[in-house]
Image 1 (cartoon, rainbow, N blue to C red):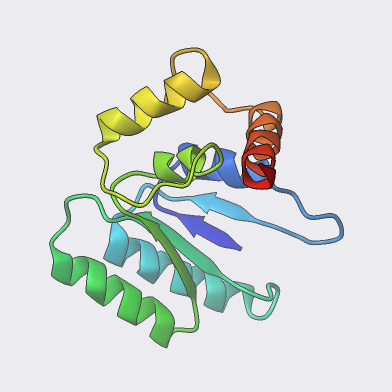
Image 2: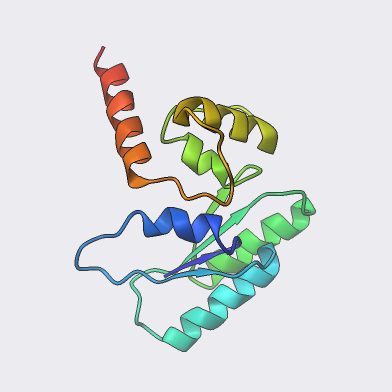
Length: 145
């Protein structure tokens, strides 16, 4: 199970990566970091052992750093896996097109995604599997050269 901070963007992203033979439940909550971890713990306990892993996915955003650190510690102590982005989930989309290791603002993520997609990136629009497939092909070509 994947429990996400975002209600739409993150669930849409993970829905693109179905694994045959595996049950994957994705919950978009809209909660902030600590509340999200609490909800993931509640869902994990409610599901008992229905899932091999429970992941908690959130952004660093502009929350106090203690909230972020405490959320990670609390999740790990509860046996959850944690995945997070620096400022916005769009970084995950961008990484399908290019390796990127320096800080970017939300506006810069959108600009770079628009460049790669060949049209304006809209947060509410779903990126298609084709976009990811093309980007993986581009990256593998670049690495072979």
